[in-house]
Amino acid sequence: MNLKQIDPKQLIVKFVDIWKNQGMLLTSGDFKKGHFNTMTVGWGSLGVMWVKPFVQVVVRPTRYTYEFTEKYDNFTLCAFPKEYRKALTLLGTKSGRDSDKIKESDLIPRESKEVSSPGFAEANLIFECKKIYWDDFKPENFLHPNIDKNYPQKDYHRIYFGEVLAIWGTDDYQ
Image 1: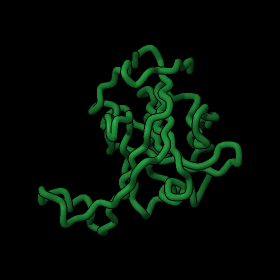
Image 2 (image 1 turned 90 degrees about the vertical axis):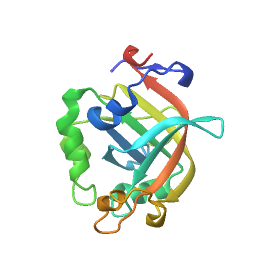
Image 3 (image 1 turned 90 degrees about the horizontal axis):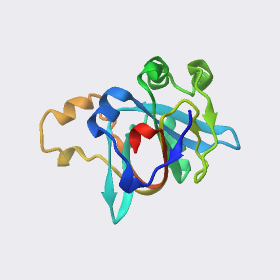
């Protein structure tokens, strides 16, 4: 995919569609060492925090990617055209603990410019991010009673804020 660097102030994105319908991969680790993992994410946000462009993602502590996101100070968030939905489904349902799910997906990891975590060659939008904050969801702070129904096993997400260091995308996002 031919990607160009995009200034965060110029980014055009349908923020609900990108999370809910398009599908995104959160990847953390070190590409050069071959030590990274990825997972499909459907919950998160884009915006400005502490005068910095940021993305916010959530990861359950039971996910293998959690270990990588805890260990490394950076991550990428990649969006894909709809034809990669099958690969993203695989990457969201299989664990990297049990198999080489990235190889099974036929997606090609690629080196990032600003962070050690890889992006993917097939992505049409890549955020390269440095972690700047984390916290855990606290059920006592849920204001709507239906929120806790997302956690029957009480495996509340960890929230990560990542400062956006670089955005790479197709012309569709400018």
